[in-house]
Image (tube, rainbow, N blue to C red):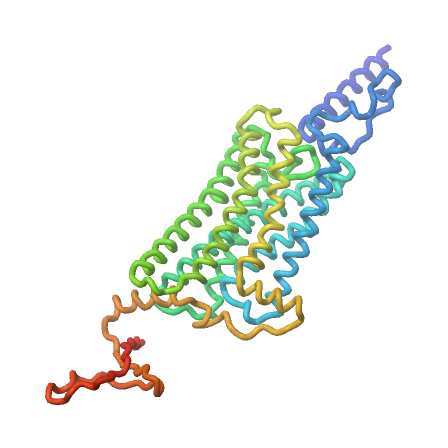
Length: 416
């Protein structure tokens, strides 16, 4: 009798421990099959055993198909961008190097992230255990922060390049390499703390993906989530708004000074980067809202379908960015057409030719304000040819004016 009481007491202890483990990590323990006692004839069918935090088999299949499409498109397109950059020298400019950094991070997501969530969706449960879940959450969080910080660095570098008072060297990669290193180190700095005890990585949604633990409402966890949103989402987005706001103001200033200055290239680059930023925020904003609701709202506020949809939208950003590079960047598009047709691309896109007249006009205006000493020359654009003359005094009043005076254009040459 004593032995049986002890046995019952031990069984109750193990059952309580298992229930607590299931409560804290419900999806990681879902791989354990139900006991034989729960599969008696009086139990309902297998479909009824699904946890309220899990999707139906059809839902898991739909998620797997979507993830498979996203992963395949993201891998092929980002690999294409990297191939074009390595093959064509005309693309090797500082600004394009920042775009390649973003494409490289997206490629890593399609290689080290999407396949594991795809396999988990196929089987309806996480497959590589607790350590694999932590590794998956860290890699995807780090690469996501890299993309957003790189967009902020790109906007700031673009603003500095266009509004600088001196012509930028198309071969100087020091500033851009420093920005890329800063993006990656900054991302690592903010995604390592959950590995060291400040918050943690765990399953999210229906248990087929892993990320930062959004649901544990403790001071340790909530403080990390607040800092993550402030320094990895709000602060970079403020930098982006500031940089492009200043850039638009500079372009409008040039437009008011000269109505004949073509701005097509700068507007095209600006449209490309702004579109990339907007698409990134559209992909990540629902995920951020869902994470905040999970952190500060009721525990069961979001259904499994409502929690997995923002995660899928976030992963779509890895497949959307390469299309923006290829179809909205004229350099990449020309190289892409040359790559498809196996032809060559003329040299260009670097040095002085990589800047449009609008960019040079901004610098010229700033240089004239800073250095009023310039030399003037006269260019004769008559039909006989183009000849340059030194400035001469006004013609003598004793000499009659020519009946057909040549067309004279004043050209300013800046002395560096």
